[in-house]
Length: 171
Image 1: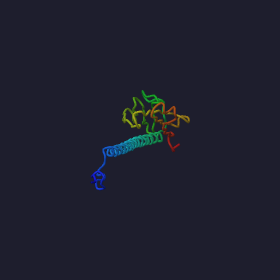
Image 2 (image 1 turned 120 degrees about the horizontal axis):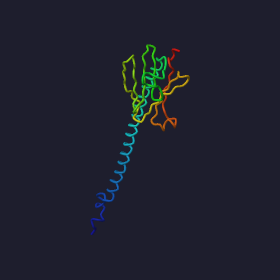
Image 3 (image 1 turned 180 degrees about the vertical axis):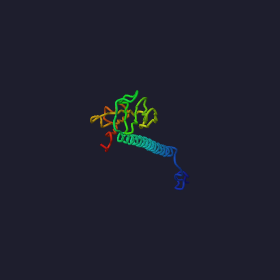
Image 4 (image 1 turned 135 degrees about the vertical axis):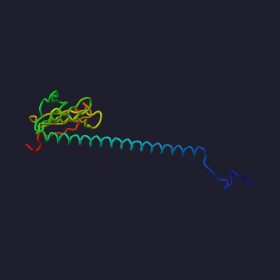
């Protein structure tokens, strides 16, 4: 008499608990790897979006700065209470009006001054760590707007500068 355990028809009919655990564990590892890759892709995409937005904002600011400097006839050292320096730039236009850029408390303000009327707007500079500095060069005709993420970046030479000549191509 033959036993059922040894007969060919009684061959394996399922998986053991150990085999099932190994398959489930392998699937869990694969799913964890996929989740880590997706998280990395999303973080990279967010960083890319922030950097792109910062560059676009800074380029818009640079275009505004270059336009203002190109239409200016001079850059006086004083205008009323305002004194030009690394945190303040005063531009004089042909019609006698002025444009004043002032960096203070982490904000860049651009004011149009016509006689005693001031129209001020705050310009975006990129992100909250960005610092702004105004430089003069080439006999005070060449003006530069320097944007850096932090003072340490300036020391490392990692910054963005926009330069323009007073009067632009008119001189």
